[in-house]
Image (tube, rainbow, N blue to C red; front, top):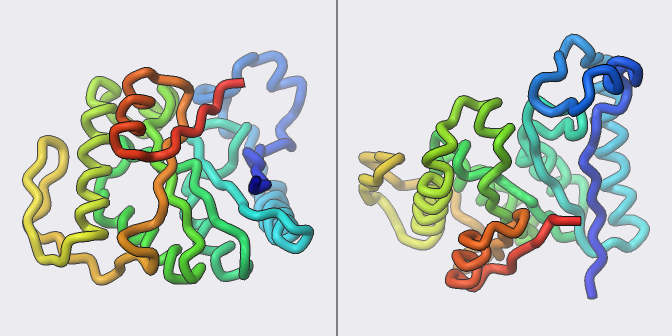
Amino acid sequence: MHIMYFTEQPMATYPADKGLEFGATALMFSNSHFDPVQGSRLYNEYIEQYVLAENVGFDGIMLNEHHNAPFCMQAKANIFAALLAGLTKRVKIVMLGNPLPLAENPIRLAEELAMIDMISKGRLVSGFVRGGGQEQLATGVNPAFNRERFEEAHDLIIKAWTQPGPFRWEGTHYQHRVVNPWAVPLQKPYPRVWVPGVISRETVIWAAQHRYPYIALNT
């Protein structure tokens, strides 16, 4: 058994009465209630919490991201992952994970994750997610192509990690004349991939076909 530490890293200092008055705060709750002074304090506190998790014996630290929502301040989980890769020595760094349909350039994402794996000396667990509806609206990505973009971005990332370049990629949603990243993972053939989700039948089947652990997030 492995014990992991996880927090959504909420922006917990907005006026409670405004949140209660508005109701569901995801997506449309005005960012006029965001206080960057408190945000700076909270980001640094969350970093300290993750480092403490290693010091008290946790086996891994987990990171995720959301957009346009005060319940999660992580707009780019890979930034925290890279930082914690350098601040920790032992714990697995588990992504819960990168929303692939939002990726405008999967090659850049492949490079970022490869760098995190190398900085951490092979402690990365890469999680790929489809992302919720609010993520599509927050980033202007057409939800009708969510699954197609997820699967194509996944295939491109894995190929970039495992097949020497340069090669060309002509897909439905991504086109690259040259794929030749000079950053590939330390772990071979590539870091373990987890697929977090909320029990989509199609995604569960897809994960099983790829022999990836499916992380059910329903409560």
